[in-house]
Amino acid sequence: SIDAPKKRSIFGVERHRSTSSMSAVDKVHTTGKYWRTIHACNESAPFSAHSDGNEECDDVKHLLNPLSLSRFIDHAYQKASDSLLDLLLNKYDVLSSLIFMKKYFLLDQGDFFVDFLDAAEEELVQELPNVSQGRVQNWLASSVAKTIEVAPPRTNSQENNTASHSSQLASSLRFNFKKKSLNEQLEDFHRRGNGSKKRSNQRNLSGFEALELDFESVPFPTSLVLNVQQIRSYQFVFRQIFFAKYVERQLVHMWTDHQLLKQMMVTIRREFGPTLSLRRRMIHFIQNFVYYMKFDVIEPNWRAMESKLRAAQDYCSNNDANNTSRESFPRTVDDMLMEHNQFLICIVTQCLLTNSDLIKTVTKLMTTCLLFTTEIKKFIASTKLHEYHEITRVERSKLRHGKGSKYISGAEFRAKRDERIKRCSERILGELKTPTYQHMIRRFDEVFSTHLATFMKLLKEDHGSRSNAHLANLMMQLDYNYFVSSSISTKE
Image (cartoon, rainbow, N blue to C red; front, top):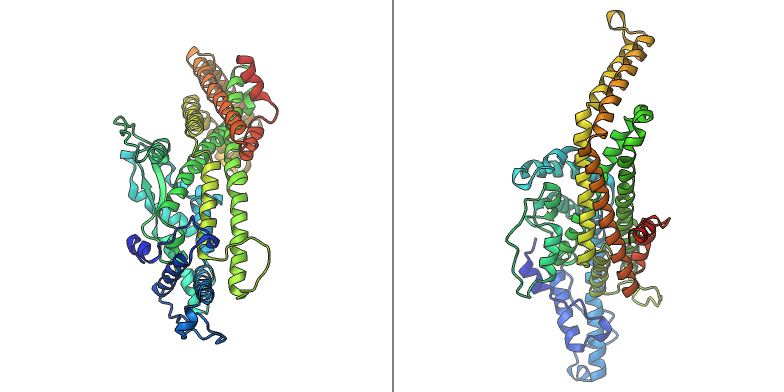
């Protein structure tokens, strides 16, 4: 692969400049860079501006004609651009690389997330200095190997190059552990260059808060599409979604624990009601926030970009230079890079990562949810609820399959089970009535409600001032029955 300095020297195109506004000098400069990039990919494609032979390009006097010279430059630029665009989209299939980024960096499918966390969760809950990074990297490699889509073998040697690039991305995927939280990293990124001092007091992050995906290297020419700045944008979104989905996972686990209390609800319903209500509100928030990022932000923007890139693939495959379709899709390499860059700008902005107030508040909400699940785990452990259910499971197995001395009758099984439920209910009821537990639930409810009210106000203000439709979608999902807004109005 080609390192970053050499890549920039080969391909130093200004991506903010559209083709229509480029001067002749810019087109000549860009054409040269396109051909140098093609030859850097070991493509022996000889350059001939007029391969059809209809014009004589070796006539110097003819080239001195401004109109003919302009046409010659335009033709040369278009041929170089079409050749490189076809190389990137068809031979090297950069779209498959972007699909790889969507699956792992944007957590498009749950198989990788679930498989990885099943193995690494106990390690990642520790503070960063105690996390074994080697173990985490091994679990990452194992999860990627299990979940990556294996392409069928191809007979064409050029097509095999595409598969090798996808496998190189998978093999070079690794974890970094950042010493700064996502909020601090975003603040440093936004205030970069203004001389602000760094914070000296930094707390130890957990493995979940510090973790981000990265590559050891990106193969050329895929690195033209996935440069350092664009990978950083993917990393910001990954850290946001990964932490949100982890919080959702913990809340769902808590819901699973609460299902074990169904047989005791007659006894503990009134005292346990505030806990269940708060858990329900937290799950409603985190699930709608994750849904918003994945299906209201990432998916529609991805579909729009994917359809344009596939149209560009067809355009290159058919060699239809005279295509007059009004369909909007990238017809040059600069257009393709700009399309991908616009996709990243949209998802970073709409995932709230450019708004420091919103991202701070939503992080406080998720942290509150995570702390709540931690406290409820301790409470469930103190009641020995899982031990009682394990004993019941073993006795039910004896009832169904036991023989001889291991067999117990149905009446004996029910009597023992009811006795355990009674003892466990009394133990849980005693814990629920303690002032410490009741104060903890009230405090979590107050903190969560305060942060949620602040978040909804910020959403409303930001939507009103900037007319962002995506924020309206998030507001509607979080406050579909006006419960949150009515609670805020009542407190005010």
